[in-house]
Structures are given as structure tokens and as C-alpha cells.
Image (cartoon, rainbow, N blue to C red):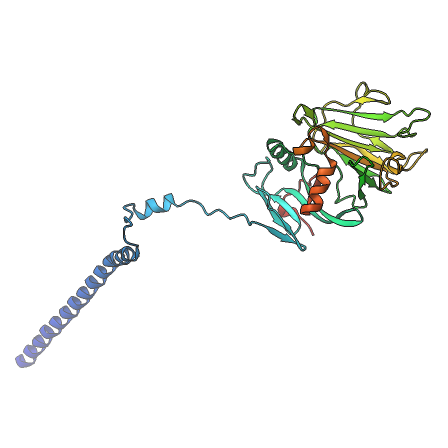
Length: 352
């Protein structure tokens, strides 16, 4: 009996030693694993330092400091946008998506992010019989564009029509017998007419012809605005004549533009302001007789309106600059812009 108890005691001692040995082995393995984990970042850092080119001083900043100093990722603006076979120059602060420009955060136009700021129209109007694309921008965007052009000494035309709404206009270069240019405009339906510039001074007028007037025998009407742009002492001017219209602005005191013009002062008018609707005819005539006069134009035609621009760029200072503008269009195939009374719907409320 005592031999059996002795044997059991010996077995317990042996098992206890074995169990302690196993615990020691696990502890050693755990310590090795911990040590390996602690040394791992040092190994990575050593590898990164070895990959640095010679002469470069390793950064002494901590990972937390590096993380704070990393600048935010800014999406690069593409050099060109291609849409419907036409290349469009990107506009600062605007994002182009499937024919529409949307305001981005921090844009220079004071628009909320996501608001529609412009629209692409593939067939906007016909120029000399061929369809032309055009881009409409909201008044906020056009104001910045006009101001930037003004700083460069450029007076650039902005169409006063919303081509998204009215794309039935036909526009022609009228070549005068004296070599100058006007723009003839044809339309068969009423067309809304928006002011394309901020004009501190403007007036509307009516031509009062003499009995045997060599220029015109019609009492047509017109709007003249002065966009506060001067060069060489001359003043820029934007002048559109038409057979008739329905004015939608408040008219001021009577204004005399000198015989044979009589009209009314309308003072300050802002960019994008709806001035009225141009009508295709009146009870007495449905086209401007002076534009259809072969003694005045080499290519006369029956037009409901004409547009003239006092442009003072380069060699045309103090002269009508319509010729220069049309020349630039034909040479560079530039895409023109028009006044677009934007929608205020945010991007997430857009519908197809």
C-alpha cells in the first residue's frame, strides 16, 4: 500500500514538472512574439530609409505630425472638356456634367455648391446658314467673365437671347458698302431680350424719319447701353435695333439722342435683366428697310433686328468692332456665350 502511494506521489511530481515546462515554453514564445512585433516598425522604417535616394535627409516628424501636414486632395481641372464632338475650355469654379455646368464649393461667383450655373446648347442659332453651338451662363458667372475681359482691355459680345428657350434665330454678317459690319437677325416669333452687360447708362429710342430720308423711312425702335468700358477716350456701346417690342422695364424721362432719334432714358440696367420681348412685326412693317438696302449693304436681307457693337480693341479703337468679333469667330471657331437665366434647383433635384 505504501509502495502504491509512493508511486502516485512520484507521478504527481513528474506531471507538475512537465506542466511547468509547458508554461515556460509558452511564455518564452509569447515574449519572442511581442519582441518581434515591437521591432517590426523599426524594420519597416529601416527599409524606407534605405529606399530614399542619397542626399535626402529623413524626416524627424512623427506619423501624427505627417498626417496633420498632408494637404487635402484637390481634384485637378481637366485641360479640355469634350462634349458632343466639341472641345470646351473648363471654367473656374464650375463642374461640367452631361451638358450642364454646376457651381463647385468655393466658386468665385457667389453661388451655392450644386446650383446650375450654365447650359450647353448644341444647335443654338444659325450663323450665315450654319448651326452654331453656344453656352449660356448665369448672370453671376457672366459678370465675372465680363470683368475679367475688361481688365484685359477686351470688350466681348454676349448674346442677349436665351438660346435654350429660343433657338429659332438666324444670324448673318451684314457687310456694308463701306467695309464695316453689322449683325442681321431674323426671327418669326417673339424673342425675350436680356441685358448682356452691367450698364450704368442706357436708353431706348425710336427713329423718326424725314419725308425723304435716305437712311430709313420706318419708325423702328432700339436699345442702346454703355457698359462702362473706355479705351483711348472712346466709350464702348451695345446697340440693337428692331421692328417692334413689348418693353418689360420701367421707362424713365424722355431722352433726346439727337435728330432723328427720340426716346426715354432707362438709366442703370443690370446684367441678366429681362428688358422685353422683341416682336417679329408691327402693323406697318415686318423687316428693317435700311438692312435691305443694296446701297448700304453688299448682302442686304429682310431682318427683324440688327446688332452693332462699339468695340475698342487693338486697331479698331473708336470704330464699330462688330467686324473684329465676327472675324475672330470665323478664324478660331470660338464658342459664343449667351445670357441664361439659371434655374435655382440644386443638383440633387435635377431631373432628366
